[in-house]
Length: 142
Figure (cartoon, rainbow, N blue to C red):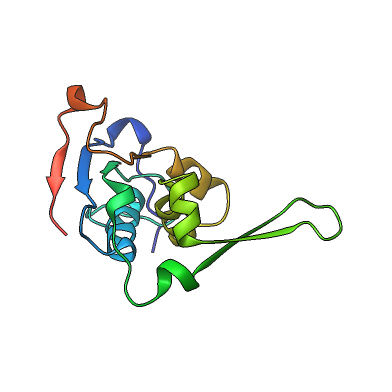
C-alpha cells in the first residue's frame, strides 16, 4: 500500500464557527480538534495539515462539570528554584478567559511541529464578536 500525499494546493480549507456558550469545555475542544486535524474529511492523513480553520466564540462562557472551577489547577514554572505557580480554573478565567480552551485544544493535537502549525488555524474569542465575517464561517452545532 502506498502512502497518500495530498498536495497542499489542492486542499480546500473552510472556516467553521463554534459557539461555546453553555457547552461543555471538553466537548467544544474535541469538536475543534477534529476539524483542525481534518478528520471530518475523506482524504485525512495523520502526517499532513488537511484541516480547516475554526473560530470559537464565547469561550469564557463554556461550562465545566462538578467542582472543576475550584479544583482544576493550571501549573506553570518560572524555571527558577521554587518557581512553580498554580492557579485554579476560576482564577485563570479572570486573568485570561481564552486560555483554558486553548490549553484543552492544544493537548488534543499532535505534540510537534504539525501541532504547532495546527494551533495557528484556531481563533478563540472570549466574547461573541469576531473579525472573521468576511470568511463566511459555517456554524457547527455541538
